[in-house]
Amino acid sequence: MAKTNTRPQLFRKLLGRLVTIAVTVWLLVCAMLFVMQEKMIYPGWVMNLQTQPPPANVEVLELAIDGGQVQAWFVPASGDQPAPLVVYFHGNGELVDYQSHIIKHYSLLGFNVLLPEYRGFGASKGDPSQKNIGEDVAAFYDMVIKRPGVDTARVLFHGRSLGGAVAVDLAARRKPHALILDSSFTSMTRMAGRYLVPSFMLRHPYRTDRVLPELNLPTMISHGTHDEIIPVRHGRDLAKMTPNAVFYEYNCMHNDFPGRTGAEQYWQRVTEFLHEAGISSLSKNE
Figure 1 (tube, rainbow, N blue to C red):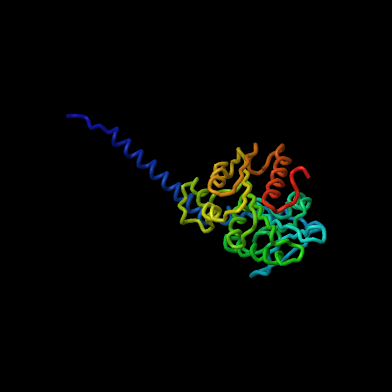
Figure 2: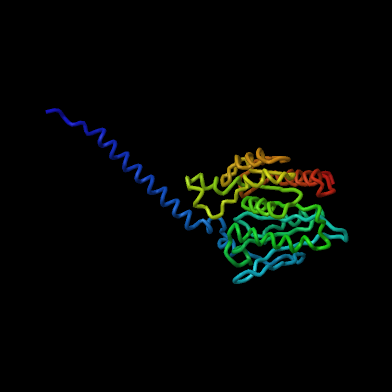
């Protein structure tokens, strides 16, 4: 009697089990990301232990929402003449409380500086979402753009990481005169795609890749070559799809952007970009 060859059967059973395990793990990851995506995209609850009072030169703006208020910091430019405005949007691992370097550099360039805080971050209450944050930052923008000290013909949106997506989101509603994006992503759906998560599961897609090419604004895009959180290919792709864009890479990762030795060159490039975009009268040599 011939022996039955069981090896193919064992292989098929083993393969079936491995596929079942892989599918189960994938479904668990998808379920976790679906349920936890707000806490992962907007981890303000982690940073809120690190809040600090605003500096003396900061005017705190408040916007009433259900269950409390959202805050923004505003630092007016010195001088009597209307000055340009920069609206800066920080990353999801940061607070406005720790953006003193942004205030310092833009104040030296003669800018009014607006730093909107996101719901659930710092002193701001409420639940963050793409919709809520978009409405809040638009409201804060509308508050300050009417001030006599703001030159409405010279407005810059500057965003880092998640803040880059927020900046582009707002630019679709309140078009600025230029954009600066640091360490930002093409879309949240693409970020989720790294984990094979279907795009329909995302409640906050942030499709920068769809909005940015249509804005047709002077745009400066910078990214760390060794960014381990948002790979540098996102920055490169944003630059390729954006008319009138300049792109720079820095020898750094995500959280140390632009690196220990890149800060001086970075701000020189920012200053020159603003000069060429007609927003600042200062050149990099001033």
